[in-house]
Image 1 (cartoon, rainbow, N blue to C red):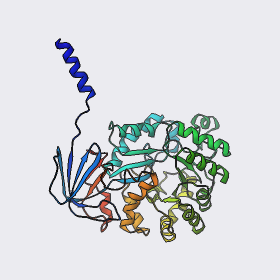
Image 2 (cartoon, rainbow, N blue to C red):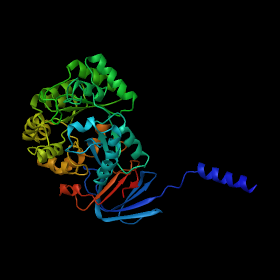
Image 3 (tube, rainbow, N blue to C red):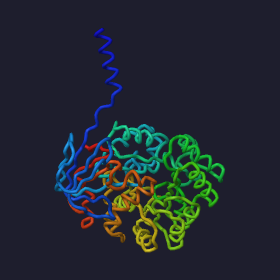
Image 4 (cartoon, one colour):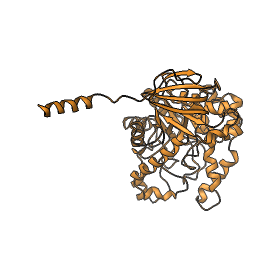
Length: 422
């Protein structure tokens, strides 16, 4: 009898979810979103990973299991980085991909996910990795198995044969062994590869619409895919409910990708007036990744990059920031992304000051990483602001970022999905 009662008690306990802790977060100065600006002291109630209540003032009007005192801090929404590579670090030899197994990317990703969320980035768009590494990290952070941000993952990028995103610089037999399976030629094959990416778990489709700075492909930074191929990619992805992000540097490649219906232009280094006009007309978002070129600047001329890469790197560095200035002048939406992995993970916040230097106001820079980035992901009702019903993604900083943008580089406390980051 006792044994049966004990088993019944264990079964009941297993079936009953643990009581969620209620957090009361005392805030010295709340900035619920960049457009609203500072609203003064507040108390935020967090439960089950969501914001349940927000009250003005310093009194706690509800019962709380945990009280977090941020009464001397400014609290802003968690930041969103729309272009990261969690599974790699800067400065490695390009031949490492022929040596390291894909599983090593998960090890690197666990490390970098922790660095990223501690820097205040509670959501990231993973912009290209081996087939399953980013998907594994996505599950790990979602289930709380590892410390890290919410991950929107692309998986392997679609590229042309021999272009940026394809493996280059090896013998033919090595190239065959390293083939990602995501190169395509012609609209039909490109549509097939989009469907393959969707089937295997991609949240977003990544394409390399132009040449790239750090690949061994040395034929410049202009358009790779044909117009018909890019239209096929965009139309197929959209039919599946997926957005498309395009690595794009050269102006004509940017123009062609935007005209084809690609959702974001990432980098946009040489965007000119003609390209930006098409972006504006099509509602294409610019994700400028200025920190990437700071990472490249720190390594150029030091024997780290091959001669092929050095030529392209110098061209890109010379143009850095101009695309943001032009985009703002022409009314093109600018959203936050860094290309972390080209520089050290955890330093993503340096992008804020670079955006301001390029012409955005501090409020516009903060919005680019919160409300605008959330809308770019189609998640504007879930993340990007501090509001009742939203995910409890919160960042505390020591100063008002609308008067000192660099304070966003040094968060003092972070919560993601209602979990306090250790």
